[in-house]
Amino acid sequence: MSGDGWSALKRSVLEHRWLVLLNAALCVAVGVPLLLSPIIPSTDLGNHVALAMQMGRLVVGDDTASQFFQLSPVPGPYLLPYGLLAVLGGILGPLVAIKVVIYTSLCLTPIAMQRLLVALGRAPWLGLWAYGLAWDFHLGIGFFGVSLGFGVALLFLERVIRHLDERPSGRQLLVTGAMGTSLALIHSQAALL
Image (cartoon, rainbow, N blue to C red):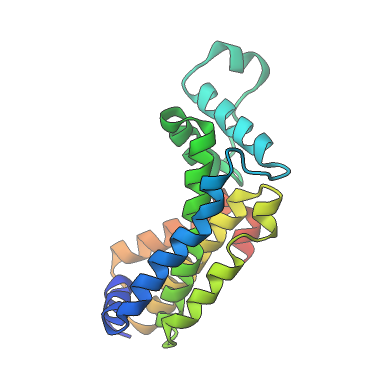
C-alpha cells in the first residue's frame, strides 16, 4: 500500500462514513461505566494508582515520599503508564486521571485494530468487534498498562507491515523504533504480542 497509515485510514473512512459514526458511538458506549462508577472496581487498580502517584511525588522531590521509596535507575515495565498517570494525576487528580488513561486504552485498541486491518488490505469494519473485548480480564484486575500496551502493540505492528510494503523515511523508522521500545516500558505482556 502506498501512502502513510493515517492517509490510508482516512481514505477508508471517507469510503465508509458510517465507520466514523460507529467508532464514535462505540467509544462513548465503552466509556459509560467510567462515568457511572465513582471508583473503578478493579482488584489491583488502587495499588497501581497509588504507586504512580508516589512516583510523581518522587520526581518532584517530595521529602516524605523519598523517606520510604526511591526510583529505580533502570527503566522497566509500567514506567510509561505510571508516568502518564502521575502527570495526569497531578493535573486532574488520581481518580479522574486513571479514568482518562483507561478510556484511552478502551478506544485505542479497536482503532489500532482497524488501522492494522487496513494495512493488511482487509476491511476496517472487522475491527469494530474489538470494542466487545475492551473491558477484558486485564482491566478487571486493574492491569491498565497491559490494556494500553495492546493498542500500542497493534499500532506498532501496523507500522512494521507498512514498512515492509514501502521504503520508510528515517523519521518513520525512528518513530516505529520508539514505539517498539515503548512497548517494553508499558508492559512486558504487550511487548510479547
